[in-house]
Length: 141
Length: 303
Image (cartoon, rainbow over all chains, first blue to last red; front, side, top):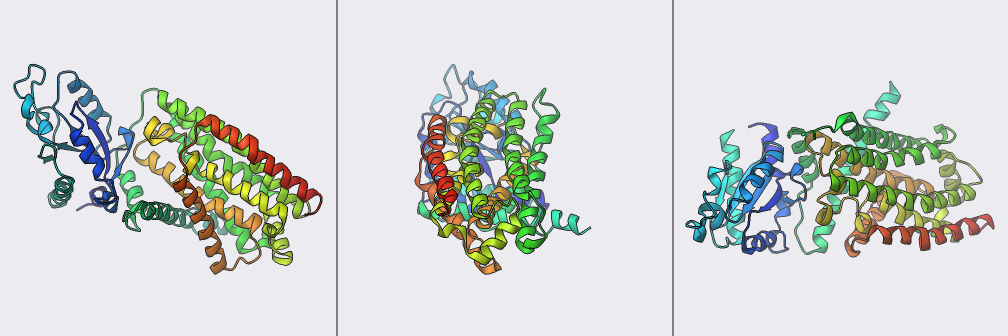
């Protein structure tokens, strides 16, 4: 396993993208940084610029307007960059799957590394997802 | 050969980078504990730098050479500051005349590098950040230099760090006089702004400017800026110790004084909300400059 990826798994800087969610998942993500669930213990930080990002945290169903913007944001992030889909909408379009405006799920647009189901997912579920993602990266190399 | 060793390894780059990264960790840990969080592990900042070195470097279109060169400019100059300060503590008699002025100029260069790099990235948010940084430099330099003039007057007109230290070793620290105490407080507030933490981080404001001046930087270049900031966090409290608290500079007391100043900086950072840039200018050109002028006056009459 090489040093580059090991360092990456120990300090994941997260850029939070809301692709038109109902804000419920976003609130649960902010819960991760509160004293109860403090994920800064693992070196995870919420950062402002996509140029600093190691992981894109995507919430919400991908509508026609947000698809090109999402692709642009993914291209702007420096690689290696992980993509995490949080919440049922980002996974499978949930209640919007018959909508005229939401034509395909997230994983047909971007390569998704981790799915966290739930509407909204609990903070504990997101932490367990991150742990599984780190294990996956370590086993792959 | 010895000069190169001094610059690259011991009081210079490598040592000051390690010390600065540990200081950054202390900052994060103490902040976390103040918010009832657990906080990161001690090696977190080293891991961050290592990770950033392995990431892809993205250059904006038309960014040019300034964008690439400015992080190196900042890092080289603060490493030189660390060397000069470290040497003058190890052997106060060997320092050269006028190194106080050199240190003052070199401490300004990281801010200039930040402004240059941000302006050349052609990002509107970075431009706003650069203009804020510029205003901040203009506002804190005046009281900072006045505070240092107080020290120069108290030390009998010398502009040599070693002589200032020697005088304090023989006659007691400058902080134990009225003018010295006031000048120390002024300089403490100014280095808070110089490091760019606490209430004076308007140029990097994460919430409003999305990292502001650093917005277009990624990978190695971002790591260099993070290192520059870490070394500044090591250099500036050390500079204050040399100027104001130079009575006992044995390693134990030096570390204790350094940690004391660092903890004060962190507590101020955590208990004050970010100031708007106009409030920063009013604050520095109003009350802080007034205090600094009073300190200079008191020093002139010998208090």
